[in-house]
Length: 100
Image (cartoon, rainbow, N blue to C red):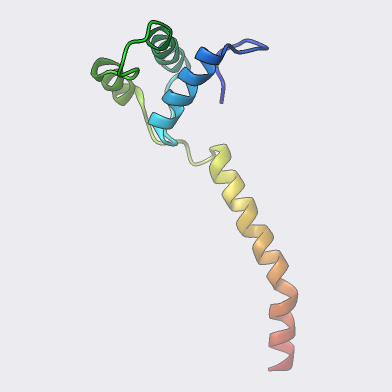
C-alpha cells in the first residue's frame, strides 16, 4: 500500500517504503506516521546512513504499529481463496456422499 501520493516513485523512495513495509510485517500504521517513517528512511538511504531503520525510527514504528484489521485485503483474499477451494471440492464431496 503506497501512501506516498506520486504517479512515479524514485528508487530511494520505493526502497524506503519497502523497508518500512517489510519491518511492519503485515502490521499497519496511521497514514501520517507511515509517511513520516518512509520519508525518514529515504533520507537515511540517500545520505548513506546505516542502519536505515535505526533504533529511534524502529521505536517510533513500534509505537504506532498495530495488527491489521480483520477486514484487511489480506484477510479478504484468504477468505476468498478458502471459499474457492471449498467450492471446487463440492462436486467430489457430493459424489462421495451419493456413492456411500
